[in-house]
Length: 376
Ligand SMILES: [Zn+2]
Image (tube, rainbow, N blue to C red; front, side):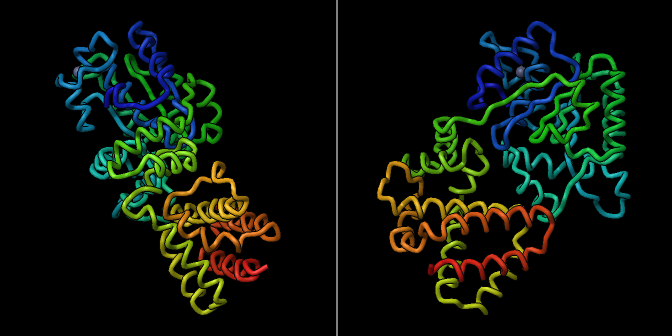
């Protein structure tokens, strides 16, 4: 990963690059900001730049030296990745360490440089899992940093989502930050820095990354999805609010999946087909928590957009071509009398799922409310 591979956040990149050039990168930093803005990519590009044997004059890693090649395979001898994980096999939960999941982790980095938790959960084999960085991983990190760097001056730890360190792991990490080994750099990447142990967070230099602009999101999208029209890319970028993972999902091979689910839910609700809605709720139970929340967020947006569609001002409407096609006959059912309640119910269902309520019950409950609201 080179700086040149990143989109947006140029000032942040310049700032980090200068600190490395002038050899004043702090011992421990946290790259923080919204999801899907490329923070983990930035951390990787920074680590590669620190290690590159032949930095180019423009201020980037060369991409071809031995060090860069190891980085491109996520196997540089002086880099240690820590990330949230689940217990594996017969190992004790507390002893779970990144080595147990390193093959999946490397695949994940290759497939999704923007680091989507939903994708990572599927790599971990449990879409409902709540992964954690355990004590065993904090020990592994300590061992890795204790060695003198082998191929370069600095040993680097990249910690994805330090907000998911459990207490004993966090306390071990705190020691590593308070009493650092020589020539080590710790680069953390956080979506929710408020959830990092405050004693750790107060010792980190904060590097704030901003969400990508719509124009930047469009350029990432159209590069990844050559068939995508400019109109759809722009509509999706607006909806995704700078979250590339969300934008990719909306346009992916199964990107229309939420729309298909939404259409069938609305049709069953319109027909008042309670038996079908009950079966649908059971199906939704099985798709995994992240996908459930994703769908509910989508419903909320679709209620809003369909209401706006009735106002007859296409300039303020953000729907893809397929969504607009469905909206032509559907939007008249979303009225001033029900739009606020419908969006509130979808948002509430998303919160309930996030708080671990039974998805089957939440979805059935929502479906019944939609039946009652949709004809008003
Ligand atoms: Zn290089």
